[in-house]
Image (cartoon, rainbow, N blue to C red; front, side, top):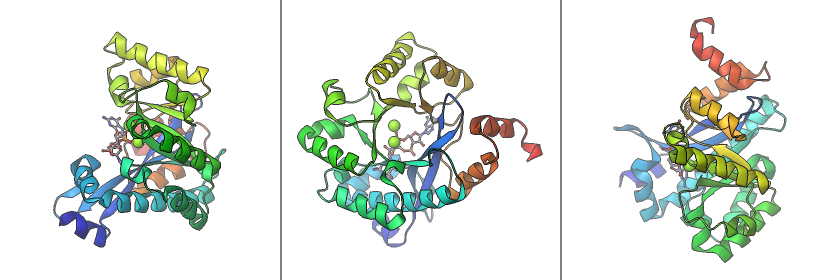
Length: 271
Ligand code: C2E
Ligand code: MG
Ligand code: MG
């Protein structure tokens, strides 16, 4: 009942988490993450409501709204903040949404109505979603790629990993799962897994994003492994649009965005 009301009353919010290039510290774009602004319980994370949303089928409506809102927001930021290449937005697509026959038409419509180029949009799907219906998934990814949209495999290494699909599916990016990143300094195996994923991606001409980067030591270890991009609370937690925009504003006069973000955090009084 709560969730139905939430949809009717537009209680969902989009939060944005920056994704930064590890080599030059530039903000490449954002991942959009949904939040529910519950009238009594405050901000709820997807983990607290997405299973109900999936069961109800409401996840489709939520995902559509998030995608449209994120594309509109990114187009506005691209206009206000010139980045080369232009800022990109990553949108999570649930299994249910991915299996909708009109997915590509809808995304195409969103791109046209918001004026965002396909190459500025990245779709995040998990391995299991692709593997559950591999033939269909391959066709979907072909169609998305025809619109120039990027494809990223979320939580890479935790699902049903058949290495053959890396060749079969048109994938641009592997997102190294938080579980490996969080353990990589404490445990040699996790560290080797991160190194292996990065090497594999490099050899196949794919990009890597490490998610859940929380500390400088993790960041430096990922730098040594030549991971391409990083995302995590070491840089910034997911933040509401006003805060993401403030981040773009404060970094607009410098090339090394990450350095500026970290400097500002160390000397907040000079802001
Ligand atoms: P995900 O796509 O793997 O997103 C990354 C999750 O890691 C996010 O959790 C993010 O807040 C969290 N995170 C970011 N930095 C750090 C860090 O440094 N340390 C740790 N421990 N965690 C960090 P969140 O926002 O709770 O989202 C959870 C999952 O819910 C997402 O995992 C994604 O699968 C799903 N999700 C989020 N938004 C949407 C949406 O709009 N549609 C769909 N279908 N799924 C969504
Ligand atoms: Mg994701
Ligand atoms: Mg993930």
